[in-house]
Amino acid sequence: MNKGDTFSNLIIEQRADPWVYKHTDGYYYFTASVPEYDRIKVRRAETIQGLRAAEPVVAWRKRESGIMSANIWAPEIHFIDGCWYIYFAAARKDEIFAHRMYVIKNESDNPLEGIWEEKGQIKTDWESFSLDGTTFEHKGIRYYVWAQKDPAIEGSTNLYIAKMVNPWTIEGPQVMITKPELEWEKVGFWVNEGAAALKRNGKIFLTYSASATDANYCMGLLQCDEDSDLLHPQSWMKSKSPVFYTNEEAKIFGPGHNSFTVSEDGNHDILIYHARSYRDIVGNPLWDPNRHTRAKSINWNEDGTPNFL
Figure: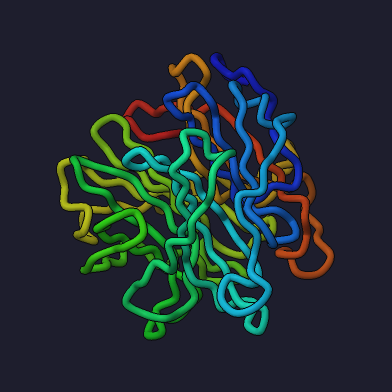
C-alpha cells in the first residue's frame, strides 16, 4: 500500500464498472453495475473505505418492457451545473444486448434523496450498440466520450468523443479516437470501452478497457496535450501496451472499467476499478457476479504519465 492510502484494495464486493466521485460536500459518491443488472444504486461515505458499509439507495429501476428494460450497465454519477446526473447503458428485454445510452437527472443537493428524472437517450450518428458514456469539462467545454459499434468497422466497439450542448445532448462532429487494433485489445472480443478522464501535468489522460471481460480484460491509455484540439484524432497518443492487466500473484484478474478520484487528504490520485480474484469462470463472464470494486493509489512516472502497476 502506498503512502496516502487509507483503504484496503478491496472496497465493495460484486460491484463492476465502479464510479466514485468526490463532491465539494466532502462525501464520496459511488455507483456501479449490480449483478442483477436491473437497477441503479447510489451510496455515499466520508472515506473511500467507508463506502463498503454505506447504505445504498435505489435511484432508478429498469422498465418492465421496451427500452431500458434489460441489462442496466455501468452507471456513472456526475455533478454538473448544480444538478446530479447518472449516465448508464440499457438494452431491451426482447433484445438484451441492444444497448443504448441514457441519462437521469436529480436536482436535489443530496442525490440519495429527491427525484431522478429520465432525460432520455443520448443520440449519436448511428442507432447501434453503444455504452459506457462518460463526461468531463476542459477549458469551459464539456465533452462526452463513449463506446459504440460503427457498422462499417470490424469489431465490437470503438471510442468516440464529441462536445455536449447540455448534459444529455451531444453535437457533431463525433470523432473516433481509438479502435481495437493491437493484439491485447482483441482477445475474445475486439473492444475499446469504459473510458475515464484524468487531467494532470499538462495532459489529458483517457483510460479505457479492452478485450473480453475475463482475465484478458485490461486497461489502455490515451493522452493528449491540454492545449491540443480534443476533437482531432491525431491529438491522441495511444499506449502500445496495456497499462494495467491481470496480476496472478496478487490475485487480480481482468482489471478494468475504472474511474478516478482523490484521497481523503486530496494529495493522491486514486484508481477505482473492478477485478475478479480468480481466473477460471464457468459460462459467460458477464453472468459471473464476482467482479469486485477495488482501489489503489496512482504513482507518476518521470515523464508525467500515470503508473497503475
